[in-house]
Length: 95
Image (spheres, rainbow, N blue to C red):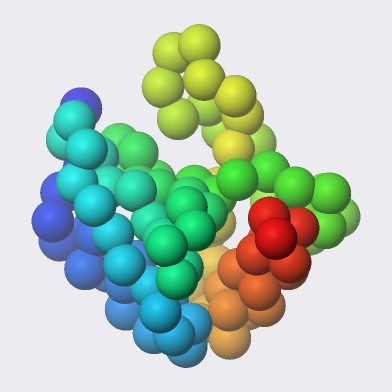
């Protein structure tokens, strides 16, 4: 099932506190970037981010974005400040 543009817009609104966010549509889903670094995506209308050491104790649930993929973490918060904190921790691990 492909993700909807409405859900993408919803996630982008949640990410409003994080500057430099962009996205690319790929095979019906959306890849999310921060300053050209891929950090997550929208898969079947789920906001998933890469799993890194700094996020292990954040209480995020693992989800499989598509068959045979590595687990990612589901972001189910609706608090832009909390999401900004999560993304910043994630990006420190990816650098």
